[in-house]
Length: 90
Image (cartoon, rainbow, N blue to C red; front, side):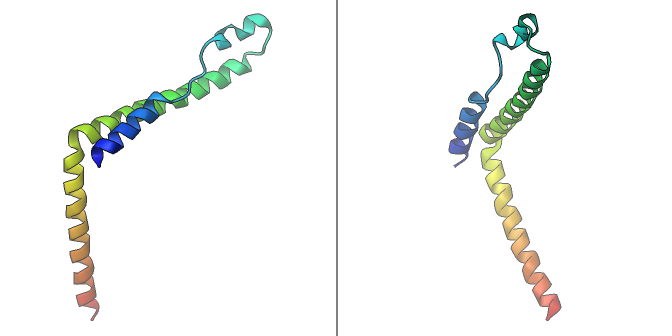
């Protein structure tokens, strides 16, 4: 399951759209620099997403089994806590 998740995150990371190319030359052609601000903002968001996806990809690959174990422990503890709360209420 974690292998599939890491593969999907890797594919999403690779598909992050960026605005590159002629945008840097727009002011020379008479197009306002506002376009550069938009492209820069867009690329900052894309870079942040890509960085976060890289971190998630590393966690899924390196610690996937640990995440599953932690989730199982949490579910068991939550179930036990609900049962204890029910006993205290009655």
